[in-house]
Length: 284
Image (cartoon, rainbow, N blue to C red; front, side, top):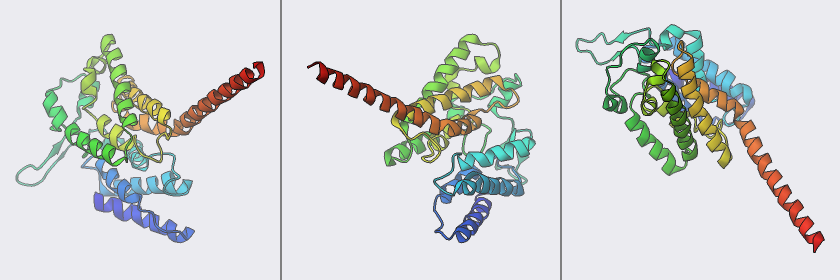
């Protein structure tokens, strides 16, 4: 899957670079690795190739290339695959290795079971360590936290967005726990943080330096809204019990607006201070 992602994506990147007469940017080296990580292991390779092509052409090159995209390219590829081929993305397709000894098996995810009111047989430690069904990268919260620490230390990922996402998801989870109208609402709020794609999304996707909010206060708002919307979509859309992808893509669209409002608020504060200072001088 990684090979197909790189072959298709880089071929398109090279084609556009030649057409536009500029150098090839190395940004796709990261995107090309992230795309297979958010896809089910049994997804046919031709579907992956189409998803990559859509993501690179529509999500990046249509806006001017790397650094100009308003949506996270890796999540856009997953969104394309999900809406174009839902049966391959929703967990209905079960894959088992054909080898003599089974190397891996994928089945219905925890969130899928909750949406269908089925019992959960996994312990918290299994959820945290990753011994549960899910996409390639999303199951082990333990290793996602290791990755988060690396991103924070290197300054690549914003800890404000990560922490804001956890705060938003925790708050909404606690609110719905107190309501408890269905299994997803009754699912403990802290377990919402370690199942599905939430942890991976808030660490590696929401912190994309291009499509995320850029201002310090904006990052807090952006992260909190991503976390909150992720849980809201999980609970109120039984047909799609995983909400982090849509939450991040939606907030990608509103990230420039958030930054604009933050900057405008700062400008207004400075104007008010200047006005007060001028009035003080006049009175003297």
